[in-house]
Length: 164
Image 1 (tube, rainbow, N blue to C red):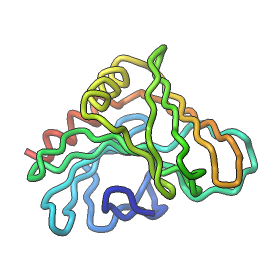
Image 2 (cartoon, rainbow, N blue to C red):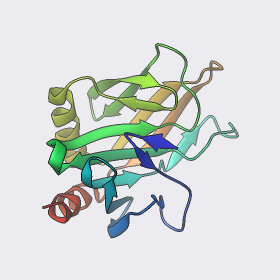
Image 3 (cartoon, one colour):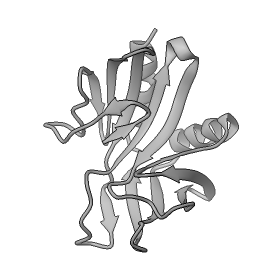
């Protein structure tokens, strides 16, 4: 799986990204630091859903990531690896409390279109207890993933500290 140039595979923790070092585990979230060829240091937090619906659907591993590349002046960029190819021109809805955010999709990844929305989502995640991600597969299956936001603030703070 790749999102924003990072390579992930299932490992002992939530994810075992190639060439990355675990900075810490904070409840449902892990913080990492690594190097991305051509972009320098990269720090990110990652989690997997606590619940996935419908049950029994065949999917690759699913991740929600928040990534920073200091040398590129990219800070806290949210993205999703959904575990299947998205339906073309579909959007993903991420709900945190009463706030909803629309992500655009490509292949098995999804991103927000504006920096303003990224900032609002991160603030909402820091203030809430859970998050829901809904997406449509290329085959027409609507999936709903539930994430715990417990530990997100500590993980983000650790990742920011790790990339100073």
